[in-house]
Length: 315
Image 1 (tube, rainbow, N blue to C red):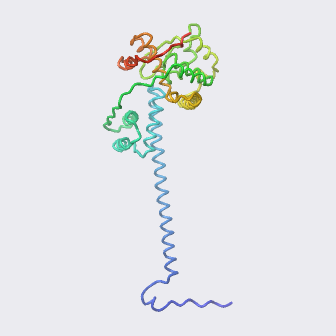
Image 2: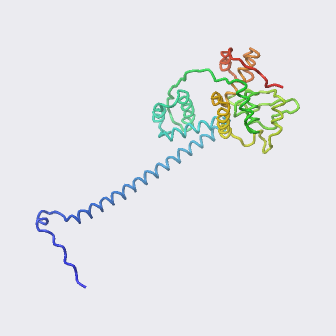
Image 3: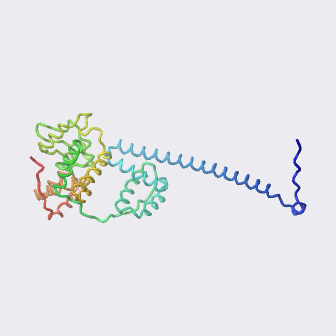
């Protein structure tokens, strides 16, 4: 077996100190491959650091939420605060740098002033818990009157709901409780003999309240399954909210009434307060019904005096 002759390099290339094309390509490929490997290595390191930082900050958010819970904050409060803080992180905010947080909030063009205000309200206690000094920016939303649906729109929504959601919405309609207060109700809070519900766990520093309910609602409550000590079992504001969105979209489409899509859990509270003021013209009565400690919060319902309502909740 013979050997192939070695390729001769032209003398002018040697004299010029140049490298053969094949060798130049090999060198370039090796350098390119080395750079690619190093780039991937640095990317991996950066990704690892980012994942570590993300895990650390999410751990702080969870710890913060548990602290709020231990201090007696409502479930809806620490849930919403956690959601807003995570949203800030997802938008690139460094929660340990208050100036960066301010910048991220200010840059959100799609956020309303109220959303920005709520985000500041969520970050403020987080900063205090983690000993972060900052001066909160001021966002003052433009005030607007709440949407008040007609009673037949509310009733159409309730009639189309499943057994548990139907009972939940009827409870909101008759009592004007907040969704968190309603979901926290226990079986021992219901007095079947006198048709009353006792609210022992008010939110937002509200007052304890007693509600007279209809026999219709009492019958709905009695048909609920007793899975634990709570009236609505393990239902949370998140699962209930998802259910309401699907329900109102379905009913709005069926009735060709887009107004129904504007109904939220808090809408029932606005509706109840408005109808009670129309019936009684007694703002102190409405204040007591809602559990407000400041009458200025209740006075908004006196501005809705032209609303035509009918009442058939009590039987």
